[in-house]
Length: 252
Ligand SMILES: [Zn+2]
Image 1 (tube, rainbow, N blue to C red):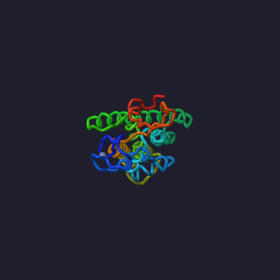
Image 2: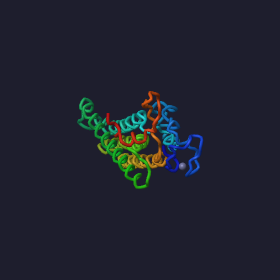
Image 3: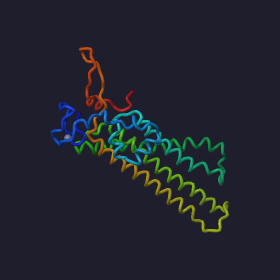
Image 4: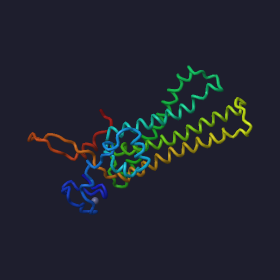
């Protein structure tokens, strides 16, 4: 077990003592303190926690928590759905795309967007492990994914702005095609394209910022203790640090 403030090994230090290196209470580094998903159940409460207090949320996120992994997948999936619906659904209004064809192409577009976002998230998780190793931090695969899954809420915010931009872009095209009669200059397309770019930037920047904040809070995070039965037959606890280091995420 490492001190979460400075990374000093406090395995042999009693929980009621202070870290010999930095003086922070050893109890503050106990993995049981990481109880984010126990306190905040449900997708929207986690979204709210990450947007409102990202540092505190990352500080209390259990490493390798399956609920956080689920939160990451749902965030990326929702982001992909929002962008693809905004990109494709208005098409029948001014193109030959029929609603039936729409139903066929929508899942493909959504899957593509989801894959791109997921690939970027995976690249980031490898990046922070590499970066952490250079800094002497302990960013395991579990830590990296817990941080990246929490930060995936950034994709969701970006997707909402990007989706609004795409809808405006559609309006702009319809205006250009004289399908919508407006007395004003056809500026919707321009505003839409700009909003879309802003949305993309917001998604990327917020994701990166949340990863950065998360890494700072989890660079020495202790994984949950693994309970096991020792040779004497009684339950005992092991820190589970080496286990977590070796076992790749999602190996099962
Ligand atoms: Zn310390």
